Image (tube, rainbow, N blue to C red; front, side, top):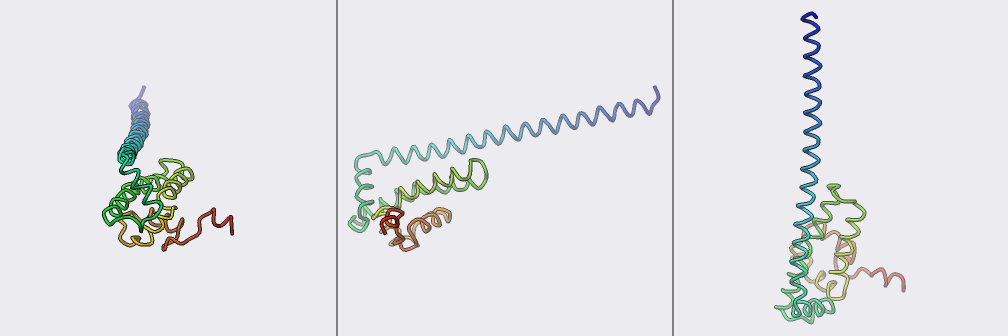
Length: 167
């Protein structure tokens, strides 16, 4: 065995070591990505559970029912509480929208869920009145703002799907 043969064996060993290292790094990236997704999902669920806990209180549930019926009939304090409840729910919509674009969840499913969640909050007489009155002052992200505009229009007067079917 010559020195050249020993050099070739060492070259093969070093190349296989590099290949094994690259495979290990890829496995670590996949594991870290899964962990990140789980942490993000847990954070969203905690936020949603906090929101649901708040709205399950009888006084808050009553406020949501009255606000969805007519925003303009609420007192100034109740209007502020109603706006706060909607604005508390919007980050979950924005995060769902963001994760759909980051491909951490199936895009069509995530956007459909975000749309349903947004529709549930805003596509009611009170939600439309709130959007028409407070659109420019609402503290929500641009994806949620665009989604609401697409659903009910910037002035809150876009017909609902049910109204389109009747017409």
